Amino acid sequence: MHSLERIRSFGALVGQSTMVFARDVGHGMLEVGHNSLAAVGLVVVAVMMFFAGNVELRRDIETQAYDWLHLRHEARADVVEPDPNLLASIDEPDAVARATAANPDTLTRQQAAVAQWISRRYRVAPEPIARLVQEAWTIGQRAGLEPTLILAIMAIESSFNPFAQSSVGAQGLMQVMTKIHDDKYEPFGGNHAAFDPVTNLRVGVQVLKECISRAGGLQEGLKYYVGAANLMDDGGYAGRVLNEQTYLKSVADGKNVPWTAPSFVRPPPSLSTQAPAPAVALSASAPGAETSTDSTKPAIDATEEPSTPAKVALLAK
Figure (cartoon, rainbow, N blue to C red):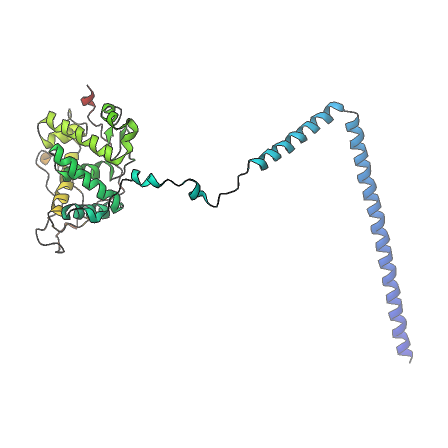
């Protein structure tokens, strides 16, 4: 009995002590809160009195606050909600007429083979290449130039990038010097037509034709085209073009030429005056047959920077 009474007495004592502690803590927090509020109130009163006695400062602050609120309001007013039907509001059914593309199925057997080979070799879509191949065949016949030569020049000059530009200002697929040959772009609406692939092709063919006529031959004409007419060496340009043309002619003839065939390797200086030879032995067998290649020579890199020729500045004279 005595033990039970002791336990009860101890429990009552603990409960009473806890209540006293909680009451004291509550009173302390209340006092701190009152003091803090009193301090804040004093600060506010002091600030108000300070601004009340400084009219100019108060006006500056009010002006800045008004300007900030005004800018925020304008910013919210200028926000345009995204249009969920954007394409429906800016559709242009005739836009397809501006696209440089053609259905590869409409090409002849020769053209289709060349277009497919170029598409794989230079990692470009077959539809625009089909259109350029068609144009090369058409304009080549009218100009008396082989279409494979025209396509080879585009390959070497720009890797079929219609927006390519060299450090000297040669532009487009055929890397024509637009400022020098601006008169040739007048029938097409002006110099910006240099970035229309078909127009650039046509103007480039005209420039090439003039170069060959002036030089008296294809290989010398290519030197004129690249701007090396007055130099002893064209840097291997003619060799690269003629080597690429050899591939394209073989493809057009139905021969199996791997699209990874190596690019032209420039011969030693002592042999540079000789006619360029293909960098790969082309097979005359039926399509699908194996073609022997020189594994010691690197395959062409379609990401290589386009050539940067001076583009027959002498023609402007």
